[in-house]
View 1: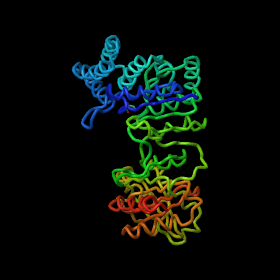
View 2: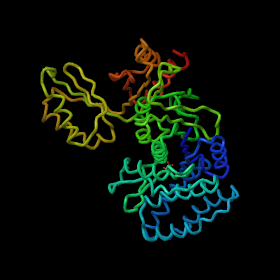
View 3: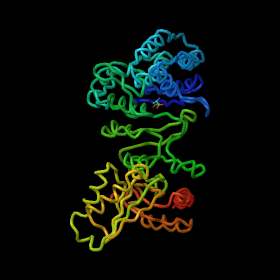
View 4: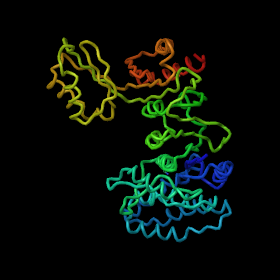
Length: 439
Ligand code: ASP
């Protein structure tokens, strides 16, 4: 058994959290490769080290004095070192960081130091080998991940190491220039390490016991998901459910490596398993509910639209020309509606209307804003009759007016459009009907 364990920022925010992570790693010999984030918030009003680094580097760029900020960052690391009783000096590292800040080595370099230093501490604490991610995670000169090169470099480096710490979030171009992933990107590093060593499991340790069926800000104490497939997760994260970085899925998915989301503060909780496929029946018909506010609908009506070949293509051409991506396009015989993000659409509204008039000469165009989309996702829906019926009767009982319905042909999800102000009650109603009544 060979596991990769990634710990998020809140799991490594201070020495106390570090000790919990250490205990978890030591509890199983198979936990051989460790991917740490930078120290996160110690309490709700605190600042993540990554944000401190961004702020400090901004001052350097503006030619301002940043020494106090760098000192505060240093203190965050020394607080951990002292708390763990380690004999470790980061003086040399901080001298180098200071020089590189002075030479304006780049914002991505600056941000990456949180993981770099935390990785050094973790390696010293565990007695594992430290592997600088700049050597094994390869970025292209455009700043995107080069997965194949990474696989080769990482595989070759880790092959002969019985255990190692590889800091998350960053890598480097062939020239050595440090690059980072987008925020939360240590999840991707974990996935890359798991792929390179052909791990049996990628454990992602965070501060929640896995995925929840619905957003806890909307539903009180929502149930937890035991198992979710990659496809379900993709649907839910697209609609706003965040626990794992979206790009962390691709490297392991191809190799069939499962991801287990676990809670550092409750290590006995089994967490959520993310798998390619499963014959396990989900506990409820639905696996999860997620949604987002802030959409607009553009409803285009023209009699005899159904027989006008190329109508849809021309409408979508208008959106493409304006660089607006569309979310859904429900249609009727003489109507076609395009759902778009309000923030992308608002400024270009008049150009879009003019474009539609020019290209398809509609009878009229009508728009509505402040709409929300809700995705009800579940592999169990395919084999269960009446799922849609239940959703809509629950929404009717909750006095929610449904503006749009879209069931994907995979029968993995049903998308529902409602007004922004009905969003929370709609999510609650759907949750209640499937989870509280266990239907
Ligand atoms: N430290 C980085 C961030 O705060 C990356 C990570 O934690 O995954 O976004």
